[in-house]
Image 1 (cartoon, helix red, strand yellow):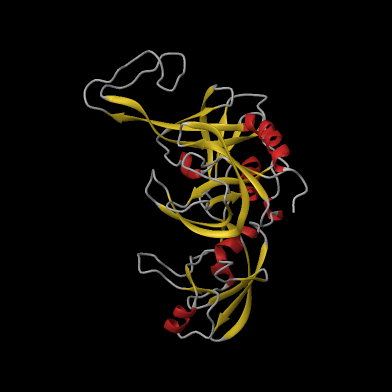
Image 2: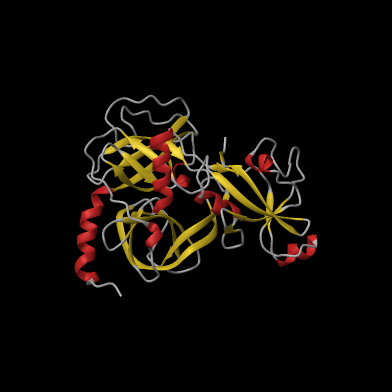
Length: 346
């Protein structure tokens, strides 16, 4: 039971963090019928001249929320908010200033993106530690609801941890699997994406990312520790780095155990794909150097068991690129140990 009055502390938290929350709009030049209205001002509210080609018009095509994590203009949001490389992105600060934003990085695994605006002395959101979350903990979601209602606040609790969902992007129409999510009953709506999920200390512990349509009080946020790792990579290496083992596999269950005649129903079965060059083990990869073969079952990596609740890709995210890794493999019904050095995905 948290030892504070929600009615007394939540308004103070909101007042503290709100200046660090931003809105994000995406726009593109799209074909229109007839000649567009070529005014001397940007449709996004900038002063100054803009040149719009004949039969094209600058149109808003999406948007979301974000939050400032560095006083020199570094902003965290969702990858799907800024997924279109052909779009222009504008950040709207809490004081209504509009600034062009550059996408510095998009995380290919997690739904995280990092933006930059050219501004100094901006208010910064303090980041917490998402590894210390507990069920029932009070959280506050802040964002730009429906692209219209800026700085909307909702309050709830953490309803679940380490959730896994298939999420659809309404812009790209693509589906992706997101793992390790925070589930909350705080309202997360279209436009909230990329906004902060705040704890009772006023620290961001998650990035609001998804809601479930046709369901009430079911929203999801990415743990802030994922975004913190991306920020560290970007600062140190100039890019987001992802570990790469170099094999194709299916995660075993009872049905696949029976299909392949295996003695176990857990682990990652190394298997090729029916596509050109769909090799089970990528040549010269970390898996190849370890001697992993098609038909092997990966049981553990660094003593972490591979299973449905802890799939191989999640385990790799916990490992460091360049470190020695120990892999436990089931081969011909015998457990063996192989070793390699984890490398970066190119």
